[in-house]
Length: 306
Image 1 (cartoon, rainbow, N blue to C red):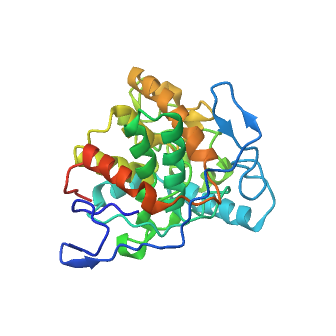
Image 2 (cartoon, rainbow, N blue to C red):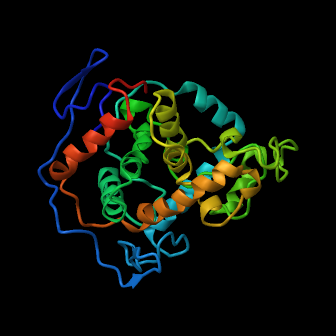
């Protein structure tokens, strides 16, 4: 599924002098739902025991060729994500159309194209929270910023687009995955940045914190700049869903304000579906398309700035 700059039309579109082809495929099939897990939590959410590779979810220690690539990804990310880099990237983003041809090199759990992950997450949430349509749309668009790795949209290196996110401008908490590689980041020894608060203050609010640059911050900026009517919890999810040191390890909470703590409740709900809905079972795009297009129309303007 593709969201166009003009009101979404699933055919060829003419955008700013360019012919944009919307790629559709008839290879997607509906298979009655997602994989059936063995365990059920107290809140009724079903979480599978293993990922598609037969390993525990987010297992960064398992020996495999994919894990070697994941570790190399984080080595490059931790070295290059500096405060100055983040400031520059936030100033340089430009208009583009959302496509989805991306496989995330930082994800140890699945190697499917991102469009299926988006739909799987959205459909799983839709089933359990049928009346929270803003949450369904948030799930659909939360990873769309990953198009920044594509040649048509800047071809940023994956370390500048995907992976766990973290604040820059303060010390790199040890809860960050593959923390050892931060020692080669220029900010690591900078006196202004290597304390717990760094350039921030306790309770300053995450909106005032510069996060490592990636698809999370980019999509958050797109939603904000276009006046999306998604609730603050939806915007919070988009910007911080990869902030695992916070919502999984409990780090950096000293920077949060009261609104952040309220929004965190929804992020924790969303995170279950973001992580555990990944499956080899594909969603029938044509069947669910009308519903999600109606949500795009409800929460976003007809024309978007990218």
